[in-house]
Image 1 (tube, rainbow, N blue to C red):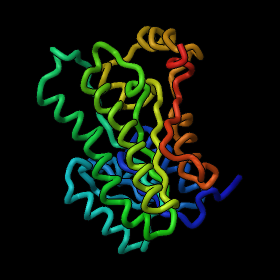
Image 2 (image 1 turned 180 degrees about the vertical axis):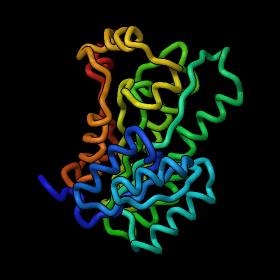
Image 3 (image 1 turned 120 degrees about the horizontal axis):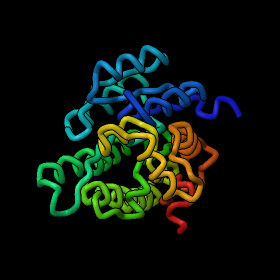
Length: 250
């Protein structure tokens, strides 16, 4: 199907790279007016120019930035139909090795920003007549690891927050939905935040843990986000879409 997002306005955080970049490209191809936001201004501007998108500089941990981003979109477009809370970071570290500063930062970027995004975008999305919020969590939000204490905690909380948001939206309007997606390790810049130089040997070791014997591609994740953003998923809310090659089924 073509033009699956025709007439819709979308905001994708963390759009300068990885899942956000590929999702923005897909959304544009499917007819949406796309805004990407990122703290990385240079990277965001390059992506915006490459795919003819709109870029907004945005620190997702800052509530004033969220209010400005939503206001800017409302002023320019008059509506917002899709929010993809994609911005995220990660650190490796068990509960003893993780510093308080790392714990706080991971939760601010990976969890608090999702709360802010939902809080500040929902009023405009409700007024826009329909809407879909897609929160990018992780398989780490479902399956824990001993050395991902902060990341596990933040991503698991995103899963449950998404359900709470979905129930709230269903009570206040039946036209705004909220779901989370949970990809396994993927070949993106995020992987380098966990492993400084991911070698072929390390990739093979990770793949052996996955029944499908493959890490996720950005395409796999962007396709899932596109489905949840489109009207094809109009009765899906409060759910999680797991993209893990069978890892969590074991």
